[in-house]
Each structure stands twice: as C-alpha cells, then as structure tokens.
Image (tube, rainbow, N blue to C red; front, side, top):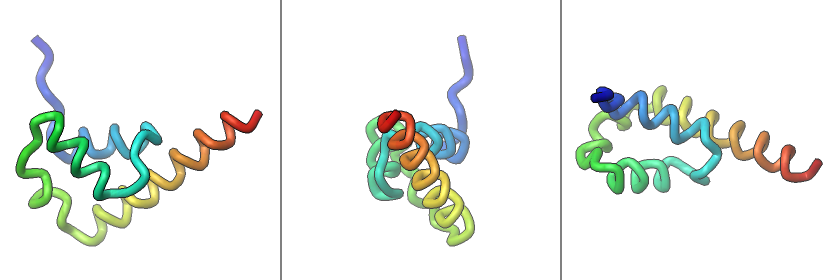
Length: 68
C-alpha cells in the first residue's frame, strides 16, 4: 500500500497541477481529500507565497498550452 503524502507535499502537487486558481481553492481541495487540518500547515507567509506563485505559474503554463 502506498503511503499518503504529507499535507505540504500534497499542497505542492495540487499547486503544480494548475487545477486550482488560488490558495483558498487549494485548501478546499485538501479538505475534500481528507486533509482536514490543512490550514495549520499552510499558515506560514513564506509557504503561502510559494504556493501562490506555483499556482500562478501552473495556470499560466496551462493557458499557454491551451492557446497553441
């Protein structure tokens, strides 16, 4: 059986996917996946800023691929 990723690892995976528009949607997705206490792990400003940048970059890449 495969071990479930930590909250932070899963947050990075979701952010890189381009499937969420912001960190609020990311937290909702984590909750839907069973990471109920995710807010306490994602509360730091540095981590939040990093996730926000990753989300923006992933969405921009996704839009660029769609525009080809």
